[in-house]
Length: 219
Image (cartoon, rainbow, N blue to C red; front, top):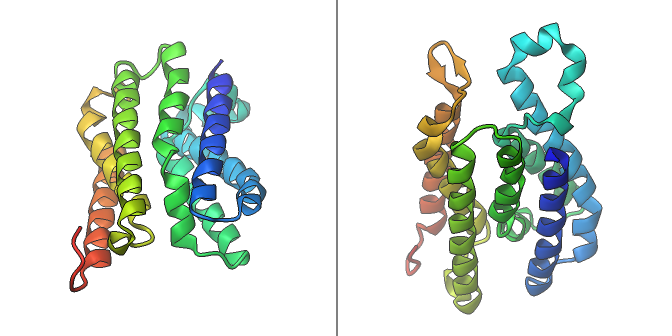
């Protein structure tokens, strides 16, 4: 069932993103062409993040590292794998990468919320999974509102802003909710989830400020 929720999340996300691309007058065919690579590398990144976290277990049970249908995916690994593959694909296609990242980020929180239902079904990462589902839906609604605002006031819109807002909000949410997770990845006494979340939150916030630091433009 975990794979069912992941598949459903991808399908719903893809259909909603297709509509968003149409409104931004971006080539939908390019989206469908790159979606395969985004899915593959997103899954690879997500699974690799999880396997590195539990590497001592998978060292003794190496074949189970491929059993993704049983759960065990790291969202930061998924984001990194998807981002790198999507950016490379768009660059090859000579597309405006930041504008595309904005369009693709709009419905990403909803996709994450649906995917987390797999954790709920498997009774894992509770109560964190419940909190993240609720938080992701709130982030999704907020980004929808921001996107609609940008569509009406194009002078305030800077390509890349929506993507950065998504990264900032999700990483900040993860920081807040990290204490509710039943399992933590710890390296040298440092909580990796907290460290990555803090780094992403700071980088995205600083980049947003830099992006809008021009006369006559307000965040």
